[in-house]
Image (cartoon, rainbow, N blue to C red; front, side, top):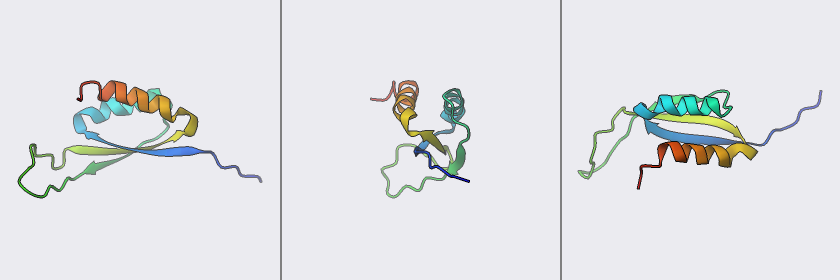
Length: 85
């Protein structure tokens, strides 16, 4: 039996819970077969925090074929970063 390695990239994305479901749908639409999700607990040090983000974020990790990385990152950016300055 011959085995071959497939070039893939592991992408890790952290987002607010309100965005996570939209991101998952977009990933599925773009051919991602599975996503590892984890609740994120953010530890902040100092008095400079502007928002209480404890337990409010989700980390998404998924594999992408190397040749599809740029297109997927562009789509994620267009959908979720267009209003960020």
